[in-house]
Length: 178
Image 1: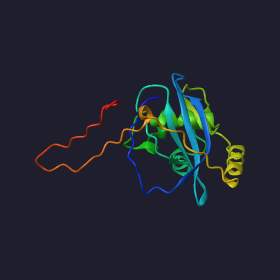
Image 2: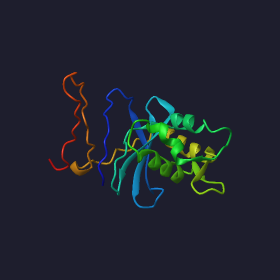
Image 3: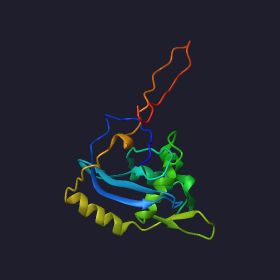
Image 4: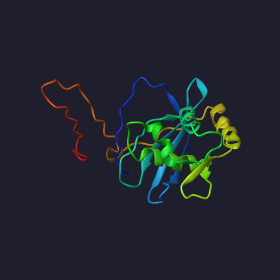
């Protein structure tokens, strides 16, 4: 599996994993593993994360709340079509592959689908069945253990410290097999 970067947020609420699945990326060049979870104590706070990719490149492994994704998609008036780049604000300032991987996950979960006559345009789908199936997992208290993470799959955490005014800011990621 490929490496990705991630900032670790130790203040994030605990998330239970309700579903672990795989799908192809939109290009079909790599397989993604993703998780569907919910915030413990707030069963309607659903979130998604991309856990791994069989391809190369960087992506973000953070949980992204469905409500935040919906908010970004709602900026399209009505049931307007959108392009995958419309999901970029979900990962503002983060890895460039993340929004495309998220679109692949949304497509696999049948929350979006190709639509329109222009290639690459998507539309939101009716999520009623998906929501009922997910709520059944949540109500059952499903909390799958996260897959073990080998050294080669561990996220590269890049600490960023404030640089003094005299020296330029340096960010150095450790070597993969250091």
